[in-house]
Image 1 (cartoon, rainbow, N blue to C red):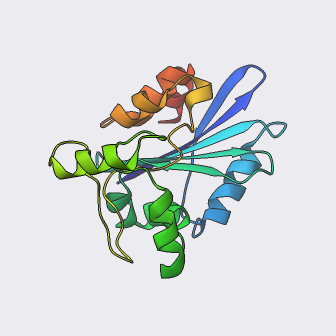
Image 2: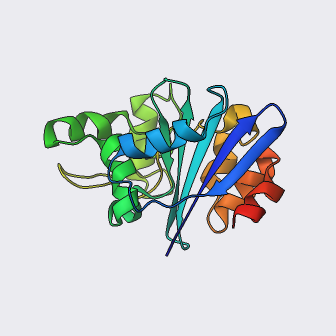
Image 3: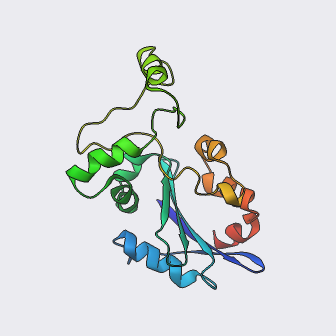
Length: 184
């Protein structure tokens, strides 16, 4: 079971509406849907949640390329709407997949951490162990732009910590809880 909602930023705050994804087959379709809801090319967030399995956020601002975050790429890739998001994040063909996997920070290391530190973390079998995936495999765990909501009040760490009822917690951080509840 999916729940999808659009949050459009306006001068007066956020406007929310639930949205039907029946006609959405591509990321372009989803982006167009968000742009149609935009007021004066302000920020529009599209939330997609599949029960407690995964959630995704698509952020659209004017004509800029959309930004995407998915809480669990492997789970999302198994669903029709999640696949739209993960295909974009991981590239459409196998040549692009390796490049996309190289750019994803799935092992919990921070940018700027040395290879030596990464190697130490990877060999201890602890929480810092890198996720490995062969060509065509979708890595488990979060993927995409972890700072997608940072300027709106939800830090990367807070986003990564979300598990269940993520949309409500995101809406609360944005000050849009009431409008999201009316959309539900």
